[in-house]
Length: 449
Image 1 (cartoon, rainbow, N blue to C red):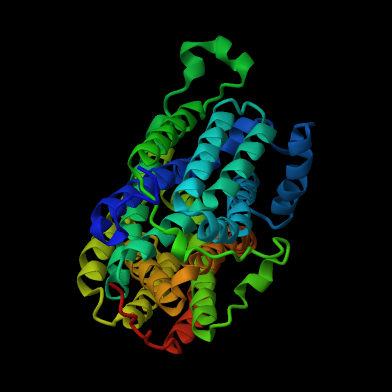
Image 2: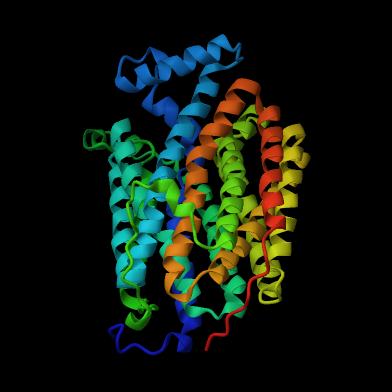
């Protein structure tokens, strides 16, 4: 059935939200499956540390010698923190560039076409990762995946297409639940599947580029293909031609101008989200290293950490946010979540026992579970009906920019001053978005059919 003859969007919002939920869930599983693997990847791609004569070894050597000069007890471990920060940031840099472009393009041609293109691109990136015996093939895979990963803004715009203004927070909570589930299943699959090395069973596969991390890559690839087939068969266009725009994304290299929205409310919400995610992404990245440093966690244990965080996020977004959606408390929930974030960072800085560590992670999960869906709902409500893709693309781009800078910034602080100072710095940083959120106005609810 074509988009022109499909039933009105208002008749099928639940079905559409279910498709978006699964699409986001599968995307996030593929994205987050790599998280527990970063510490082990340095050992694989750089087995001799800074003594390797290849290009990667030459790049890593200054970091290793810097770690030695700071008196670090384990220079190789500290070097892996920075190595992972660079690798983690690469994906998000591409998301930052591409999210508003995909969002604006979907405002012009519709959501379905863009989702199909980007999901196919994600599958291609995972296929490249499967054969990434070389570090530079892995980098290429991350570049392609990051560019296509900007489709999260399009999926979020679909939610805005099919929900009334009074139910916008509830719809965005579904997005949050998909994120939470993705962060449960992805790292868990990554940690567990990394224990299966195809080369142990078929060593000859090494000549084709198969590596110890090919099984997580294969899982991501299969999920992306399943996602692509699902969208092709079940997803109907949610943006009718009458509501599309002819506007373009403008000059893609004018990156920071995209935050200059004509709406001061949208600008403030975007900056609130950017700084919040700057702190959160830094914590998210260094968390596995913190767990290894203080509690000697293995990849499987690190995977379970993300399961714990994601489970609480689901409870918060599926229970609290969805129940309170439409009652005009988005601003209050955002402020409450930011306060929880400050507390969480303070606890993580001093968590020397596993119980306190888990309590801090629970606070952090509570924080992201409240802040992300309520801020995205506010941005949607502040924006025009025919510019939802562009507005939410800029919002997601702000998060991607934060994910590009946050891991590197956190790694540098962690590297130079230790874990205690890194998390205290994160607590201080969260004061800024808290002050911005206090100035956010209550949106005027638009009446929609």
